[in-house]
Image (cartoon, rainbow, N blue to C red; front, side):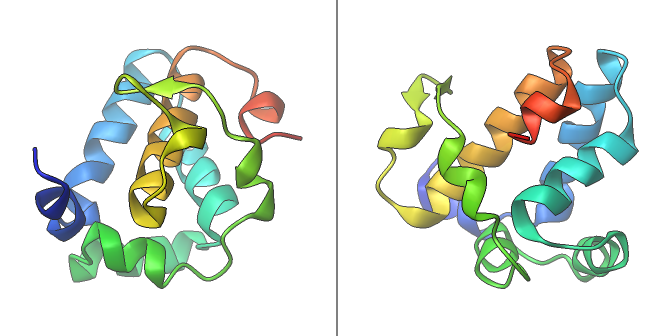
Length: 116
């Protein structure tokens, strides 16, 4: 998938995959929402508004209320690439969220996922 296609894809198209991945491993949609909120600052209501509006991924991250400064602690490999080595800001945010959801689905304690 090209970078442009990922950026212009609706976040609402990606979100169900995050939820399904987590639920398949015994985690909840509420936990996925908590992870998204921690990373981006979106409240549950704001997230629902974004999903209902069909906001694209680039805009989702660009307009995030408060990107968490602790996101710099997100490291490791996702999709064969080290998150901390991704230079393009939007792609780094997308892959950071992918990494957090992956950790959640792997059963990592929420405190660890949220870098607490």
